[in-house]
Image 1: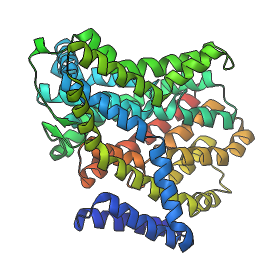
Image 2 (image 1 turned 180 degrees about the vertical axis):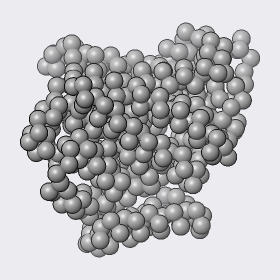
Image 3 (image 1 turned 90 degrees about the vertical axis):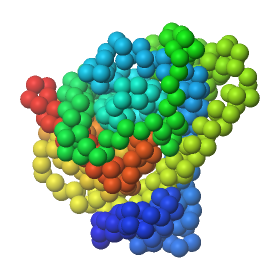
Image 4 (image 1 turned 60 degrees about the vertical axis):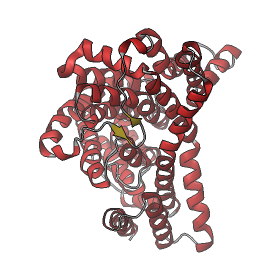
Length: 444
């Protein structure tokens, strides 16, 4: 019954948005309320559950997205993004720029959360795409694939670290095997998938000079833009700070004051704030740009992302009613007596949970907990179990996941386009990741 309720909720949501053209946030709240009631959440508690879902989703993203949007707007309005795009375009050319974006995204993805990576990279990708006269989606898909694979498979990202603790797997082993699995997964779900999708669904590849979240494309006279060095340092400062904190975690004792200060500076919220302050100086004050003009740029950035934040919050509400309604527990009972290969069983259980409840973290932790007895009974490499769960946790990102709405808004796609581009990509990513893990199981 819970699976039927989820399917009904998804169908109603698509109907409201696609056919009736209802505002996406309003549609998400309506469907969240309906699904929550059908799952047995008391009428007196449904509003609280929805509020908690919105709050928990935006609580971890609002600061990063708000400050990141301001940083991106300053980089765009100052011409720093244009300078970076021009240099990269000249160095790699039109044919190789896709691979350059993939490589940069994967390296950046080792240190940054998926959401932070999007905020940092997309403004530059948008400018590069316009400068080369190609659709932003052509570069954005490989970029997002690389970031998402790193986020799902590789420590020190939170989910792989938490799953490794459940399976008692050494993080070093998870990292090494994760990179071996991630590289072919990124290649197949990035450039390869991108070229196939472009042939099968070319209408999704819009060439646009404006984006609802990123704003308008403005060409500059190169002489009027900041230098490449200061532009790249300012744009990548969040990466530098967060990567520094990650490295410090393994080199310094957590009890020492220097490490605590570094961890504070390198937390996503602090890193984005400090990077924004640096941008205000390097791209504004240092170039004698009036503070009033800088303030206008930052205000415009917040206005552009306001609806996106509401929609992401609505996705969090939908996820929360599914979790509170006991869908995870229901799915867990379906697999209480499975007798499959531990790696395949861990992937299937996690993937089903991911499709049903929309939360990568909840699906991964629940799936890992269900798979521990299977691993202990067979003695399979625990690092491979971590990767199998990680692969399952990204399966079929759709309307009950906040990441789905993030991609829709940032990539400026319709609901149909997002379902036909991003959702299949995450399915392929999950399946290819499982295949890589099974291949590694023959060697390790």
